[in-house]
Amino acid sequence: MKNPPLMDAATRRWRAALFLFMLATGVSMASWVARTPAVRDALEVSTGSMGLVLFGLSIGSMAGVLVSGGLVRRHGGRSVIALGAGLLVAGLAVIAGGAALEVSAGVFGGLALFGAGMGLAEVAFNIEGAAVERTLGRPVLPVLHGCFSLGTVVGALAGMALTAVRFPVGWHLAAVAVAVTAAGVWTVRAVPAGTGRAEAESDAQNPGSAPGSGSETGTGQGAGGERTGGVRGQLAVWRDRRLVLIGLIVLAMAFAEGSANDWLPLLMVDGHGTSATAGSLTFMLFAVAMTTGRFAGGPLLVRYGPAAVVRASALVAAVGVALVIFSSSALLAGAAVVLWGLGASLGFPVTISAAGEGARPEDASARVAAVSTAGYAAFLVGPPSLGFLADHVGLRNAMVVVLVLLGGAALITRALRSPVPEREGPGTGASASREGRPRTGSDQPDLV
Image 1 (cartoon, rainbow, N blue to C red):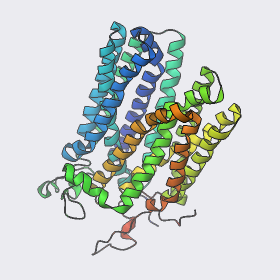
Image 2 (image 1 turned 120 degrees about the horizontal axis):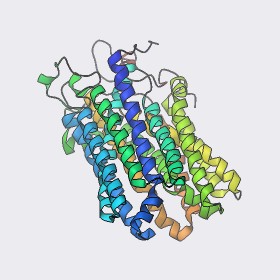
Image 3 (image 1 turned 180 degrees about the vertical axis):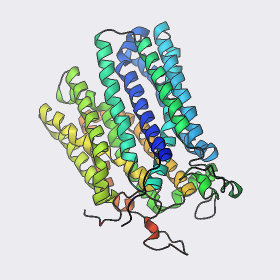
Image 4 (image 1 turned 120 degrees about the vertical axis):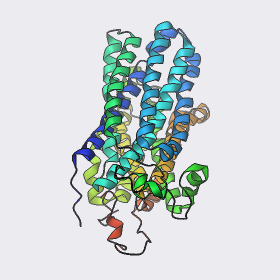
């Protein structure tokens, strides 16, 4: 087994920049969520009207997610991150202004900008993180997503503290915007140009191209000879049966994570009769478990491989969800949230990483973008649909959908095993399949 390559200074800055900005995005998202009640009070609107205001975030997020992959293939990850960061900061500033001026339309517009920036940046960051993994030959995406989870914990704690001292929400979000601006500027300067871009062959020899970028191979074409850019190219990647199965896994795991984000506090309050404070603390426990799982998951991936780890993760999450649904004890249900968080923590980043394995850099970018888009769609759109089901069967019973999806994901995790390239020529075969991809444990036997 080959040792992973040493990290040079440029790659170290590249990785650190991704970690920093993911942390900043987590802080910004949690800062907004923590101050939602204060914004509602400032706007003096009903809960139903506030729901319409919040719809701006969903619209912006889905728009950003859906166009991000195509923009990365055309302009490269760094340009899309810069655009996303700019929209995110602008959105925070507009939200702060709208709250201070008590203008609902301003908050709606700010949330749309904020969501679009988040959606654009998230997909681009997954593509960049996958490129860093190919360069280093070891897991990066779990820690990258762990930084976002850590940011949500930090942002939530800060938001709770500022709420307690009645700090003005406008000034709070404005300060977060300044911090995100600083992080974004440093990130854009540290990230190499061209990652994920589908280049023409004449551009492939550009000596300034970054490791793992589309300009490295330069064809911009998939295995079937089709360009990975454009709508047809984006749809063509789904002809791969393995990628379809990976997409189904990420749908289930993202749905499990998003369901907790959207419903967990209310699930504990309405389903188990806890106080609102206890419901918020339960969500905090979930966020801490998610963060812990993502930071601690790297060694497990190296030792056991992505297929075994995600299978075990799905089953652990399923046990947690089942206890929350069926337990009559609020205390046991609250403790089971730890299993839910730990189990859901690695599903999204590991499946994103597996999507790009065994492919050329420009093909890997299209595959990562496709699976990222599917995952974020499930994360953003799927969980709210549980509310309609809950109107008929109750919120606890509605969570059975999450349980079924996790069980289904556990049955198809063999798709996460690394493919063996079919290319011929020097360096093909089993040894070639070890080149240019993260050592996430596929060199080890699948122990589950």
